[in-house]
Amino acid sequence: MRIYLNAPKESWIVDRFVKEWKYHNKTISTRFITNSDIIWIISPWTWRNLSIKQLKDKKVICTIHHLDPAKFDQNDFEELDQFVNIYHIITKKTEKFLRSLTEKEIFYSPFWVDSNKFYEIKDKSDIRSKHQLPKEDFIIGSFQRDTEGADNRSPKLEKGPDNFIEIVTFLYKKQKNLNILLTGNHRDYIINNLKKLDIPYVYLPMVDTKKINELYNCLNLYIVASRVEGGPQAILECALSKTPIISTDVGIANEILSSKSIFNMPNFENATPETDYAYEKVQNYTIPNGFQTFINKFKEIYEN
Image 1 (cartoon, rainbow, N blue to C red):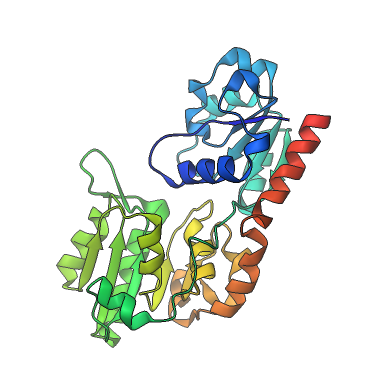
Image 2: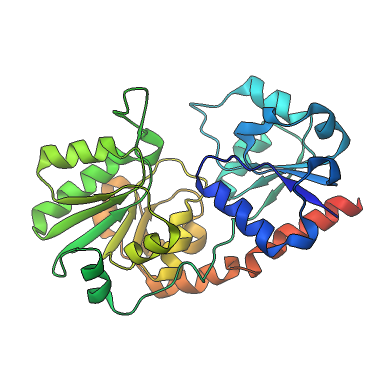
């Protein structure tokens, strides 16, 4: 059994998944689509880069990260669907909509997370000093894109940057030592609003995984304020690093986080992080455990 993954090559998290899969599953992976038994379309937005002949000749599993009805392309999906044998979803919230679109088999499993890359650092004071973050501040993190459009000013509303601003504005009125820590590209919407509100922030552009883990460990709180998500992977990473996190009820939030840590916008101030609960739940998805559900499904596809 040989599996070919279509890496997006976009310096995005999916490229990390591809790299981790190939490193830990060398004996069942191949770099060449012609040598494969199964094509794993892990980045479905790039499926047209694949050979139609190969898609017809191989067994195909396609990952659906999330489906946003407002942006859904029905024609593109119908073209892709004719080549797919099985769909993989990373959140159960995607299943109902996907089921209305296809009769193909749907298999559920969140992606894995590496406990060698994301872990708790005990000395919080030392790690804050390393990154020149004030030891006395209450630091709230957000490490995901919030802006889109050609002008890079329009909010990416599915990520809930307006929700995030509403929450931190409320908290800043109560806690003047608040500081917002941002990483990643396309953070213009939140940065511009923090400037208008005169809320302190620190912005670090794209950083590597080692530094991301260190930054998680600098936080008093991480907030996921999204309206639509596949993961987000930050939930798994926060859980492993024991970073306090609260989230809207999106993606895998209710499978990893306590119900006390999940909020909707009218009651966000009642949400309470429960790090031990999240840490226990995330163990099912750490490497190598997190690979096993995928391997079992690939064997089933290959043998049938």
